[in-house]
Image (cartoon, rainbow, N blue to C red):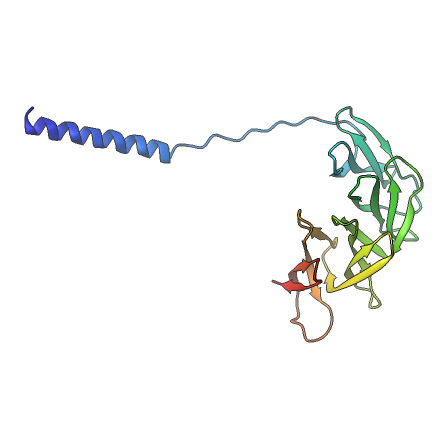
Length: 219
């Protein structure tokens, strides 16, 4: 085979490899698709929270002009309202107990305001902690909450519903709707806010809370 022909074939092979590699590396990714199913329920509903076993969903439903706590079985679409007291004000946040037997909720505009509990099977809601809001569950059954301290600031606390024990974190939560969020492993949480106490840098920060040690780190 002539030398020039061999060179030409080699060049064509290199070009083909380069074109194939370019198409593989730079190919347009397929667009992701999704689908959804309308579950039904009330005309106005928000803030869904799935139960620990995945079999139920709690959410806020408007009853009249007040948000109440409702639960639904997604498989069937059957739902019911659990809370009915319209004098205690709006529900702002909902959290499941780790065993899925009750729900925690907060009332932020009524009297008394605070964190309440209600059995998932129905019953009366009862006050657990006054002047508190935004309950977030932890794996051991305790809650992270925001509670007004003596200076009327929304301080972060860890709260054990069974004993009433409270452990403070030196952080004030801030924002239009102050919130604290727990990581999936239940070991840490984040919150936007300010340091409480003296000798700390001023201004708002994002705080990482170590839930085992009670330590706080700002960013």
